[in-house]
Image (cartoon, rainbow, N blue to C red; front, side, top):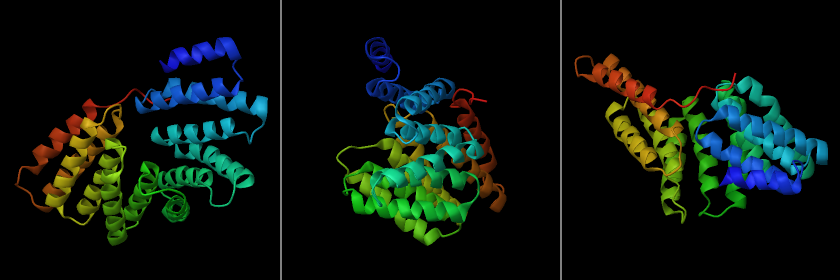
Length: 274
């Protein structure tokens, strides 16, 4: 197991060895999928501090830890705390990597997500557009990561009311992911979730219901995908039914909203790290 591998590397190589730091990161990523934030964050901070002390603040182990820790914080609703780590990672990657490298694109993607959660939508769009350009140029059509970054841009475009562009991009994401040799159901459900949100925002409630149901079913079938996407799709269904009820009372949509709100609450993950 990942935990066993880390214990062995700690014992044989020491805490500051590159391979030990890699094991810390792998275990932390697995814990993040399970929303076990306290354990994951402790490992990521250890990796960050140990890597920085042993190799310097721009070493890839420290920078990777910054990116993962920023992602963890924003998932817990702490975008303000995440931003310094995201910017630190991007600055390090711009200093030490080639312009337009995938490493820079990864850091831009995380920063864009952080800024979007801070409601700085224009800044978020700028960062994510650059990230998408990098991934389009630097990856093949078989890259799951390529479509994941594109989905993040589609979500920010939706928030800004750029529905047509968001729809086209999201359609490309879903179709591209389905053609990938590695079928990532979690990422497909993310695309379906965004497509449903677009339809809801346009008051196409029946279309939104179809997309969001698909997102929920896909996320439930994802092996090792964690509870986050199941919860988000259930919350989106509840929001869609509530908006549908407000627009067309008497159709029983208020009861469906309550049903899906309860389902969303039933898949809550562990408490976020304070």
